[in-house]
Image (cartoon, rainbow, N blue to C red; front, side, top):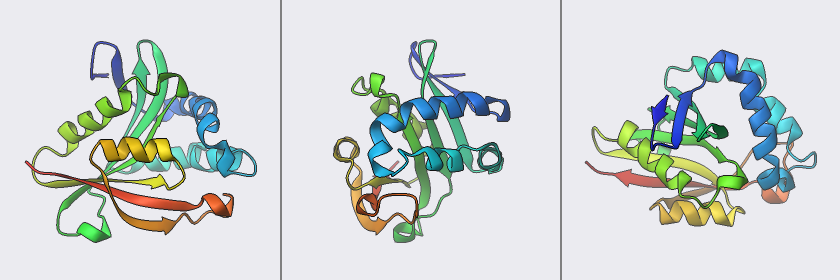
Length: 180
């Protein structure tokens, strides 16, 4: 268990945590993202969080995958990919913030800010690093948050998913340069 504060903690996900992860994502993903999908995201959740894909993601040596705890309650997930090159910045060490999902019940409490600051300290402290992520271009609250955290939009692209409604496939690549 990694303690960010006395109430905010991270536990490293393991294969045996699959059921808990899947149930958590079925609770916290749809309230925010169901409008993107004709089936409210069910197929996407089943594809991304099925046991085989979960094992594959855990097996990646550059993957750091956590459950986020607030007190005794699991409230989200965080996945970081180390050495994940970004085309726009090939010559600089890159870390991708691949997933950060929080329960709507805890949004606005500063947890996202604490998590990003922890990622910066934990994985971006040795040398100049690019911390980057991809965000839906229609999720204005998320975009505002990332921009407040000093991420800048560097690219716009279309998410390639046959399951997602076409009008919501727009995404931004966002980058934060961290200098040491």
